[in-house]
Length: 331
Image (cartoon, rainbow, N blue to C red; front, side):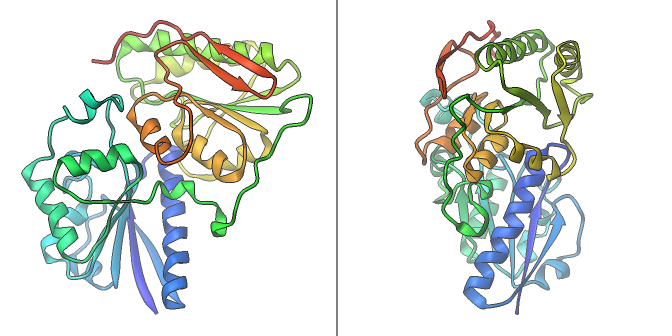
């Protein structure tokens, strides 16, 4: 029986926990398909383990979000990287992404190159028999620019349970009975708190006017009183309270994604809510905040819709006009 270790670094964001859960599940399915039986274990990336622990497995699989980045591939973020030279089993990076500002060529090809230390470790992974797999074509381009070849597997959350085909769940003629709305990501710049809250509320008002018979469910995927986005989140929560809209904090694990099963449509900012819904056949519209949404969308036919501009959404009852608030450019 093969023993495989999965290493990721989930913290608070529900999406990171979902990636972890799906990566463990997919690793087990693939390994059992190839070898018959497999023992798949999980270890947090920041936990300091002796090199003998890693070598006690037949392979190590690391992944989890936008880790194609000097900071997130550093030994402090992934302890595995600090002992990589002494790891004797294949190490693979699966479904890694790039946390860029936009998918435009100026950002993709103008971004700083990885440090020599990180590029050396990526080369070592490839030489050791591991696989480096990007979750989208934008990440692939960034990796290629750094001299690193990678396969394109998408994110583990793409994949439906058991790799079974998924049928689109179409709302009835009266429109969706329940619509999920996911919140914007971390808003570190205080100047953005007001505009992000304003645009989120505009989106909620738009959905309420276009789908007056639908219930709305709002999710805070990374928490409410967070280190950076607390004031923004609290302004949105006050509006939700005033208008009787249900909302949930689903941070801390992947369990909150089950809430979307009772919804017939998702509209919002969270990439992994979008991917979860797509993998379940739930109609979903993602508003891209940065390059991550475009990265995941390039291999499959999604129409890009970005937060910082006026756009037109095509919904089940005809065009939905989304007029976004003016948002200062990110620094």
